[in-house]
Each structure stands twice: as C-alpha cells, then as structure tokens.
Image (cartoon, rainbow, N blue to C red):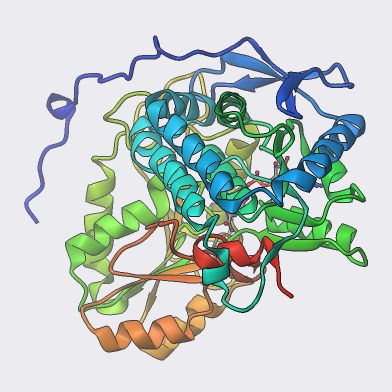
Length: 484
Ligand code: NAD
C-alpha cells in the first residue's frame, strides 16, 4: 500500500461553525401545559459543554409534584387531542417539522455544544433525521385506518417517554412524533447531560400553537424518570437507554396496566468476508464504531474479519484511523468529537484498562487533545476472544474489539454469542451470504455493505437484552395504538 505522509503539512485550517446566531437562555424551566414553569423542587443543575467544561445553561430539576402536574396536563389534553380531526393533528406536526427545519442550523450547533458530537454529524444526520420523523408521522396522522385496515386503531392515552443522551433531539422526535400523530399526549424526559435541544423543541412547540398539555417536557436525573415510570396515570412507558435501567423499569411496572417499549443497549457484530470490497468495508468499520464517538446503541463494536484478509483489513484500518480528526465538535473538519460526560469517559477508560489486563493488544491513534473537556482517541483491540469483557459488554465509546473467523457458521455462532441483539453489518459481494446471515443473526437490524443507516420509514429495535418493541415505520405507530 502506498501511504500518504499525513504529517503536519496535511493539517486542515480550522473551520469553526459560528455560534453567534445561537439563542440560549442562562436558565431553563420545565415545559408543562404549554408554558415554561418553575419546578417545585426549586433545584437546578448545569448542562456542561463536554469539549470545554464550560457551563452552557442551568436546567430545572423536576420532582414528583412536577411530574404529577405534567401527567394531569397531558391527561386533560388527551380528552380533546384524541378526538381532534386527525387531519388537524397532522397539520400541527407538519408545522413543528417545518419550524425545526427553519432553525436546523441553530439546533445542530446546540446539539454539538451540549453533547460533544461533531457538527457535521449533528448538521447532516441528527437534525435532518429528527425533522424527517416529524414529517413522516405527520403524514400518517389521518391515515391510521389505512395503515391498520378493519382494526379501528385508538390512541392509548398518556405516554411517559424517557430518552438517553446520545441522539438527544432525534430520540425526542422518535418518541413524540408517532405518539401525538396517533392521538396520545406525552410527558418526555431528556437525559440530564443533554436537555437543551429538547427545551428548544419545547419553545417551537409553544410557538406552533400545539394545544396546551399535548407535549410536556420535564428535565432532571434518573429520579425524575422514575417518577414518570411510577406515576399511576401513565398508560405507556417508552424508554430508550441502558439495559440496566430498562430492567429496573420493567420490574417497576410489572403488575400494572402500563404498556411498554424498551430500546436498550447493544454490541453489534460487523462482519467482513474475504469477497468484500475491502476499502469500502474499512470505511464501513470506521463509520460503524467511530460515528458519534461510538455513543451509538447499534455501533459495530465487535468486528469479525475473515482470517485470510485480517492482516490487510487491520493495516488499512489503522492507516485510515491516522487521518481521523479528533477535536473541537464545532469544527467542520472534525470526525470525532468529545465524550459526552466525565462519567462516560471514566467508564470507557475503565473498559480500556480491563481490555489490556485481560491480554488484548491495544492500538490507539496518536492525536493531540485539549486539556479541557473529555476525549478518547479511536481505539482498537486485537487478540481478544469471545470471553473478554470488552467483547461481551457494551462500552458505548470509540473502542473496537477485533476477532477473526474462517467459516460462515463460525461467524454466525460468534456474532450471536452475546446477551444483546440489536444490530449487525455484513460486507460481502454475495447476495446468498447476505440472505443467510440476515436470517440467522439474532439482531433487530442487519445492514448489508453499509452501516448505521437510519430512515423514519424503517423499524428499529432489538431482541434479547436489547429490549422489545419497534420504533420507526408502521411498527412505530403500532406501539402507540390499541385495536378493537
Ligand atoms: P441510561 O439508562 O443511564 O439513561 C437513559 C435515561 O433514563 C436518562 O434520561 C436517565 O435520566 C433515565 N433514567 C436513569 N435511571 C432511571 C430510572 N431508574 N428510572 C427512569 N429513568 C431513569 O442510559 P444512557 O447512559 O443515557 O444512554 C446510553 C444507553 O442507551 C446505552 O446502553 C445505549 O445502547 C442505549 N440506547 C439504546 C437505543 C436503542 O434504540 N436501542 C438508542 C440509543 C441509546
């Protein structure tokens, strides 16, 4: 392979996105019944920029009384929203989609400041996809009878929705858009490290004229989430987050009439066969594990390479990694931004330590990183096996565990040997292999010759400890409806 010399002379000049147009308040309150209101707790916590350690804003912490107010508002709103002409419901959702679209750049910048993800990703992936979800489900609002013919679909009532920090606005859109399109009302809680885009969305919802109480956005830590889960007047819990918390929630609602969907963790297998287009596969590996710093539930964090091409793939991968730019999330050249929080960085570093202790060979890209903020260079582990902790557990960071295989049956067995079942990728030029693996891999989504592709029309969800229920597409509507 002819290698380019990627030394300093190849460095890009900074291309920082401007933050002049960003309108952020110093302090945010709860969005309940169509207004921003103070929490009964009178407590606030800071939202911190993970690339600079600077406080961006202080955010209200909702307590049990606030959740009760939000649920009561949602219940009251449900009485009229659920019987509103579905065409009118659709119009509101279309309006929200267009309003986010008009302010897409502002949302993208805030998402990168608050969460640490590269501006290219928030600008080109998170925000457009969130907008698409609102557009897509707005279109279904008056066509539910056609989506489910002769089944007479009816909304469930009040949905309690709890989301993680890795795709803040997108996860809010995944939850809110199908729920309200079906005639439900919602109480949504963003993750405590990334509340800002959900609160900006609340501003848009207020401006859109959406009837009061249809969408309530409450902020706070896990305790606030558990107040939602345990509220007696919630009809459905939609949770996206870790398997640990998902199990706790399921235990708490057992025996109640609450319906639930749980979108949990993953440990995706990305499988490269000898007949794959190697250079494309290498790009696919990079996208599968380093997209969004690896903070992706469906990340391809376990790489399986057919033995006879393993050397070539790993060499090319290391070379490709040497050109990845780690740094300022607001720089348009950046490939890998900041780790979302100090806690998450500590978790990742602990897994890296365990990986080394258990005998894995580590390779990390050399890069200069700022003293402030939370950073982790793209990391590979080779010489690991099925029983290694870093092969079994979700790291949720830019850390890839590489194994090899000889036969198709061997790789199916290895790929399925995990408590999770969310995602997988296959790289081969043979359609027959793709069909065989897609059938036999225990994963909710299987990509062929690509990875991490998302679309609002396509259902997404897991098996085993990756949860149950589907979001996206028609399946995503079903979770918010009951049928006669
Ligand atoms: P987390 O489970 O710690 O938190 C998720 C949300 O739950 C947060 O809003 C948090 O405040 C809240 N929460 C915490 N404890 C709670 C409790 N006892 N009761 C109710 N709510 C509670 O997860 P995280 O660290 O924010 O996110 C990372 C996890 O999310 C990863 O495991 C990732 O795989 C998963 N995830 C899954 C999907 C999917 O679609 N399957 C998508 C994105 C992220």
